[in-house]
Image 1 (cartoon, rainbow, N blue to C red):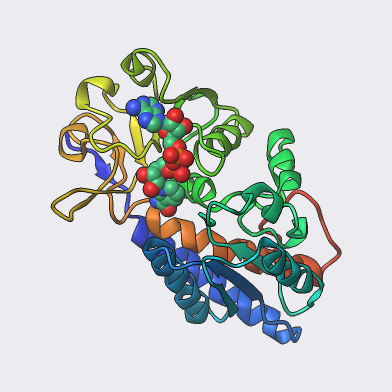
Image 2 (image 1 turned 135 degrees about the vertical axis):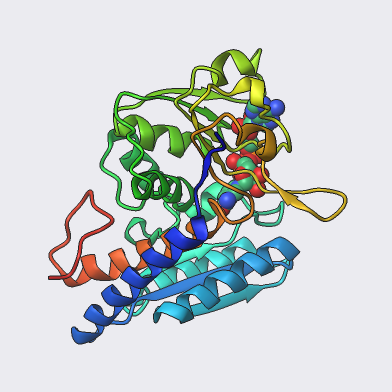
Length: 295
Ligand code: NAD
């Protein structure tokens, strides 16, 4: 039987409705969540991502502030702006759109964002929080994957999870978040020998490698849940993930499409993190939850 297709657009829309309610509640306390987005250069993909984030903020009532720097901007100028945004009470989240031009050290820039405004979850403090299971801001893409699994009532505890891809923004945090939920996690990457011997063991297979058709049906266990994080533009213009969708959907129990699976969740979880920050500031600060509701 063909897999159930996990509809990221629908799940994302539901979460955004909840976000609107939380923003309305914050307004009764005189607070509007504010997100600062910093863009350096004119990378076409980054321009699209930033536009989507700004639009999503406007849709649910988050105030956004966009800052643009030329591609040859001095890193010190960006760091000065971040220092100012760290101090501003109307800014709850600060996001630096990646990648940055080559003369920037991404790590040094990200380290200047105040950890309690680091809505992307890339600051070392937040990465450390993830490692010990006391996350302040879960990184948006893996957070979105966890939400998709929750919405589909897919159990994680005790399951064999294989994550293909070990980047700092997707693969590693994904593995940590699922391990925190008591899955048995294996991480594969470009140097993994015989990828299929690992993927075939997965009850839940998360793929974030950026390689079209990396995962073929014979690499997937019958009944597995397959989450495709990859986004690849083919020479013919088509957008595809890392999984052979048509083949694998005949074997899996659940599968995410590309587009329309994980993608919409990433921006949505950015909104959730920004709202959570505003709520936390209003309430007594509580470490360890990104979803503290205003009472
Ligand atoms: P990255 O290039 O930083 O990391 C890719 C990882 O995949 C590396 O760990 C690499 O070792 C591994 N890998 C590469 N080829 C492999 C192979 N043949 N077998 C096994 N592992 C292999 O990429 P990233 O930033 O983690 O993004 C991964 C993919 O996810 C990209 O397609 C990206 O566009 C997509 N992405 C999607 C979203 C979203 O919102 N849906 C968000 C971020 C990234």
